[in-house]
Structure formats: C-alpha cells, structure tokens
Image (cartoon, rainbow, N blue to C red; front, side, top):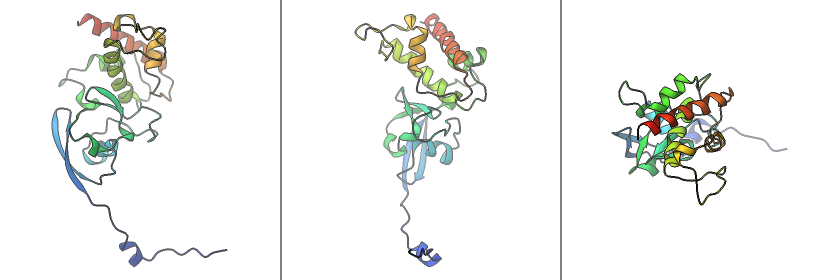
Length: 194
C-alpha cells in the first residue's frame, strides 16, 4: 500500500494558472467583452460572466437541451461549445427572443398552452422550437420524414414530425403534450403571419 500525500500550500502555488483571454461576443444584438479562460463553455460564459441566466445548465453533457440557444439562427447546445469559438457569430439567448415587452409568438404560445411545469427546461424548449419551425419552413427533413426527397412544409408538420424535431429537449416533468400543443399553436400563428 502506498502513502498518499496532500500537496502543501507552497506546492499548490506552483501549479500554473490558465491565462485569461479577452474577446468579444455579439449576444442579443449587443457586443459583450469577456476575459475568461479559453476553455470556458459558451453556457458558462453567459451564466457566470455575463449574467444571462436564461440558458440552463441541466446535464452539462449535451443530452438534455436545457442550454439550447441560437448561433447564426441555428440551434446549438451551449454546454458543448467553447465561447471563444463564437467571436464572429450572432448569438441569441432566450433573453433576446422577445422584442422589448412583446413576447415572441413561441413564448406566448408556451404560456397560452401551459407548455411548462417547473420551467427549468422551458428556455431550451422555446429556443429549440423556434429554430425547429425555421428549419421546417426551409423544408429540412427530420428522422420522422417519410420521404426525405419531399420533406413537409411548415404547413404540413405532423405531431410525429414535431415530436421528432423536438426530441433533443428533455422535460423531467413530462409536459410534452402541452409543449407539442404550444409548438402547434405557434406554427399556426407563423403560418398566419406570412
């Protein structure tokens, strides 16, 4: 059996500290300057350094979707992405989705359809749903698309399509029927705004 020694305080001070890098991110229409360890995830940069706590840290492994946000209009899991990698990108968080006091139609649909219970997953669900409807409007197929050569338009999204396209977002409370209804409601509103 070996003896385990605990490093003394003098030994701990000799451990090199990571150097901090200063860079800017364009978030919700504003330039933000950060000075962080280059290994900082985008999620941690938002929550711990910029005070944007809407994106949630659920699993921190890219499995739950609670940290979903938009980068250049695409949904991204911010816990799997380094902040420094997005210096030249447009980042939108749940805080930037509304226009002033006017909720985004998806936010309004989640409220109207009671698409949440505890609310922890809701920001990620909403961000994913907004991007998902945009993907559908561009006729991008999903795994539930019967014929990928002819994906459904936004008007034709079935409940199975919505469920499949939202499957990367977990709700521990099991509010899935209301989430799907909220997406369906927002889908109808989006069709009406064309």
